[in-house]
Length: 632
Image (cartoon, rainbow, N blue to C red; front, top):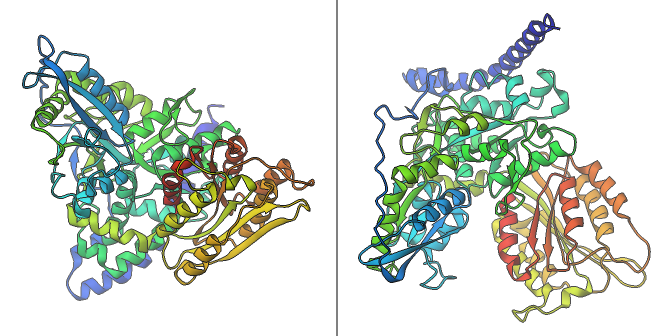
């Protein structure tokens, strides 16, 4: 047995080198023209950069050369007088657990700030949503509910909020309370097969590999299919922002020195657009992707069935490796650790860091007492007690140090080299503005339940159908010219015939928006719910229209269970069809109202590797559907 190991390893090295040489030939051919043009103009150094990376790492070591000694917390001897100053602290979904525990630690000790006790209340939302809300003054909250402290998981969101109109209330910079590197995470067998667990790639090599449909086959693993690169949406998640920044940086020649001019350059833009073609689809949070990877393993397969690599923060890698996943990015479930753990890979030309900056909002609703309480809470986060919480919850402390256990379980580098801060505001904003143009285009059919129950009246006074129409109309704003979008609906009468069927063909929404909206407005509730027949029929139709350059999907909204007047498609027949089309189509499902068949909708989305969304509180359908369409 021992004699076979060197042979296997030797064969793997040969496979790696053969695949790498083939990918490298492609890169050199593309870059060679750039070198020739630049040499004519004398631009030799720039040409070398454009060829990508090399072995020299950029950036700084993660661990401080001269570590700071954290001060001890100094709570008051007794609580100050009541009523307590209420301090609302808004975090992102990614860092919410850490921020909540910091709030718990602060609240556990007596506090006296300017003579008053303090009560810290932690809330959370997606960073992109919080940035939008900040620009509008958090209009859906009362003064008593609005945040005093905002802790997005990366400083980039301060830039986004300020550019959107929050410059008067959001400071330019904040106080970092802990950090999480944004890395390339891969299942261990895949990282081993390609060799990146021992020899980290450049970002250019990552994107080149993601575009190589024969990569895994060349490395002896055709069962892994093509290279599937997962990314979160840069509209809402810091890891999604980072993925776009490294894509532009790789395309322009330097991840560390990206400029607005390079973001706006036509050749760079085209390269980034080609990078995005390797994306299966986008998701709102890292947990969404990792949940599906775990589901693939639990079905008896491999995480490789769902992803080859995903750009996420270290904290998410640690969570996954210790068995914590989340279907919705909100509710966390702890299970046994996965058989195939993830490996964190730190590309050699640099990686961005989610720096978790705490800012005190300079808003009209923030009192002097709250400002003082905020300063004291942020002080606490920098103490030995606060930084212990930071380390315990999977983050690097202010010296860049991880706990030994987190580093081991998470397969994380204790002191990687190449850390990069997020760029200045103008660069971040330029990438946000460019994303609608470079993202992978959509080929999506909205499939809407128009059974009789959709006429039920909600607390808002609308019927369910009216609420769904409003939500779809708003969600349509996410799409732009070049996205192919269509609309179908399903119900049936006593004869069992499904109606009305396709009411607006899947076509460029830039030309057909009015037609789509007119068809949507004309939908009426009928009677029965042929859910299985509708999914079976339209999944086959959409699969036949598969376009590998697009995200091919159905968005299914249903408020009930399968119910027909006469026998029709069975659940088993529908699931068999979904299994057939699962390599060409994603079926996202949205449970609308308390009577929706959640189990069936989860099975439908899970069969194609898509995601299930919960609007069982029908008044939340606009927000939930808005979250869903960030997948495109």
